[in-house]
Length: 54
Image 1 (cartoon, rainbow, N blue to C red):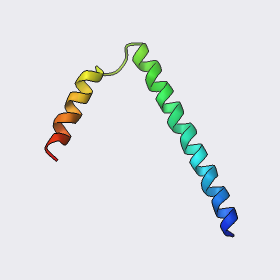
Image 2: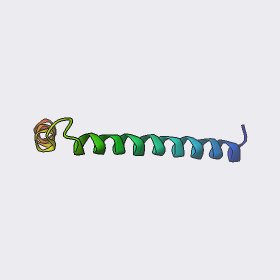
Image 3: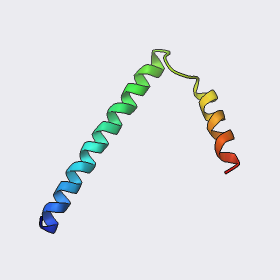
């Protein structure tokens, strides 16, 4: 595979990954607005405790 072709493939993969991430973020946002999932304060407190000692 030639370098320009590799770059096109790489860019295509990055674009697909970005679309997937955006989709997951929107789904999470919709779940949050619907009242599903954990309290974000609780979640971030847990993360802070986990990584403050690292």
